[in-house]
Length: 373
Ligand code: PLP
Image (cartoon, rainbow, N blue to C red; front, side, top):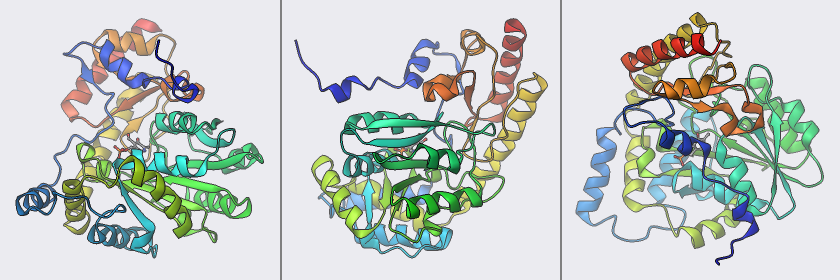
């Protein structure tokens, strides 16, 4: 009999996967967490060129190539007004690895990590893998994370709290005032704020602000990635930026777990970050149009849905049995409970698919709503 670590036994395969597997092959999939656009051609070309030239054959520096880290620092200067030393950046295998090394480097067994509930599935799982304990904080009615609730959840054992805006699974965007508060909490309580900003560019109302803009301490780490920004989920390229000593500790985890991010992906990411940004705007306007169609359809069926201001997810409140009924009728959505107890009674609907498909799905959802009422 194999034996397993108690840490891994606390984690199960994501509920999202189970939903996909339960649905038939012909199902309309509104469960996906990735943009339905191609990776920009210039990013693909840069990787191909690097491969052909033999530039991507070898390990890069553990942190990633200097030119990629410069491109990431330029991005933060351009978009976030942050002055980041390229040495304080680690290129990672997607935002996922960035979250992993952040938690692994900062959380001890027995310590706590405050996470939004409902929230992205990795926060809870990765915390368990460190031996730490996730401390879920229920969201406000508008599905944003309340800084006061985070502050109230702090204990002497808190190692970090996670902020995610725009958010998966809710589509919620935190206000500038909230971000200021998260920075204050990180400063005043000397606690790490991990700010997951992977949906930064998918924002329709309001604007993206990072707690790092407001913090006066070194207590904010930013996680970001090319995955959602440039429709590059398959490339596995993200990054983390934090203070020099935090980066040095995270590099220890990254070095032994990964050595470096995939070299071809680093070339593609650099081209995406430095190249024309029109693809970002194209995706943003397209998602906004789809969001409006989805919200109108949900409202016509009488489903209450906090208005998602970003990402590409909506999270309506749904009657009991609704998710099963919708899946049975051939539309894949994810039960809110897959994202934490706070997601109970909600469903996550991804609108990263074309308008015809969304409209077809809405018809089916309307029938399912009638059936379960
Ligand atoms: N953070 C959030 C909020 C996400 O939704 C995801 C992916 O769905 C990630 C991080 C990880 O992204 P990546 O594909 O870059 O690992």
